[in-house]
Length: 341
Image (cartoon, rainbow, N blue to C red):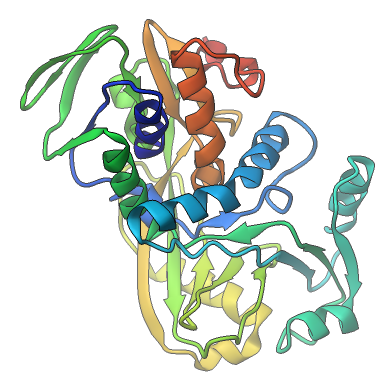
């Protein structure tokens, strides 16, 4: 969020300084799976779907621009997202509201789903396929966004921590900074800097498996979790949802949950070597909608919960428009940081 906003503001000729206590993307961004699931991650019509569809539309252009500006290919693919049912009628309500909303997707029977993705569990009874959803490599994205922001004219200073914030100034461990506008893009740590922001950490554990390239085609969801293919054959399996505070640990229970998700979808993955297992903190809010706006004279761009990668392009654009006094592409009232007061 921070580097995306810096990129937008610098392109508008603003003098931008990004303060980072570690390195850009060291927390939730690089821990994420990178699913661009505007339809597959939406629960129904409303502010989240509006934001998600608008942001998904920006991803092809953003990925191409990042590659041209920085030489980094962030792995954007319009791979589609497949949701499978291994029992129970949990997909029908999703299909019904998406049909009413006029969204593009396909209902698949078991034979059609197996044709699209060989090796799926034989217990599969039906599936939905969302061809316009996709994926990026979230571990490559932070470096590309930071490099692009610098190329546009922004400065990034890392290794310092913000200790106090006022509307036009802040104190850091490296000294005082004054600015025309301050924007907090601190993810799960936002509430430590702004009272009333109500952003909470939600731990998610992810598992990386070694598979052969092409073993998994589209991103695949079961009711319990998801599998994400990478170009080199790795498959990422996610993700747990744990309210444990700032405890960044991987656990035996988390590993058991993730291996269960993997083998329920693709039973052959029971023989796949485990490459890695990590955790990150999603920035959650009480209504699962992000914070895009101002509170107490300080702007906030945070609280994107499970979909920070998907929502980054439109969120940065909307905040830049607001700060620069431009008309915003969407109504920002549903994302007002003061809505919980």
